[in-house]
Length: 87
Image 1: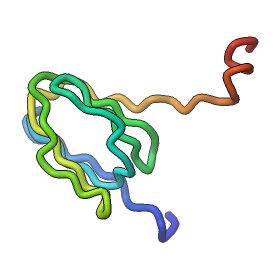
Image 2: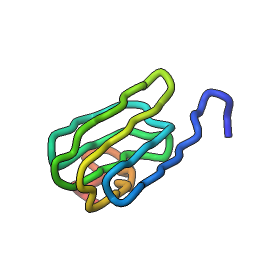
Image 3: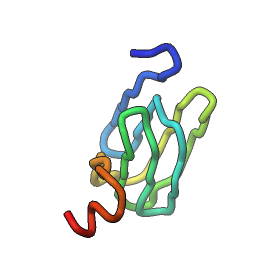
Image 4: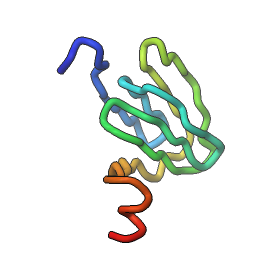
């Protein structure tokens, strides 16, 4: 692991409190979805009554509380839009 990368860790307690490190950017959030760019790709968190409780991008730390139903890493897209369109 390079020195400029933050370790990416997730801790989920009782499906209601999620703490993370290695977060680079909060892309979007509302009460049902939180989208984050992490050291290991884009992470989509879904649930109900979601709230950002801690946000420290300098330290790469984020905490989310609510009823968490899924954590999904999106696969990075390969190639440009022309390649995706024409395969």
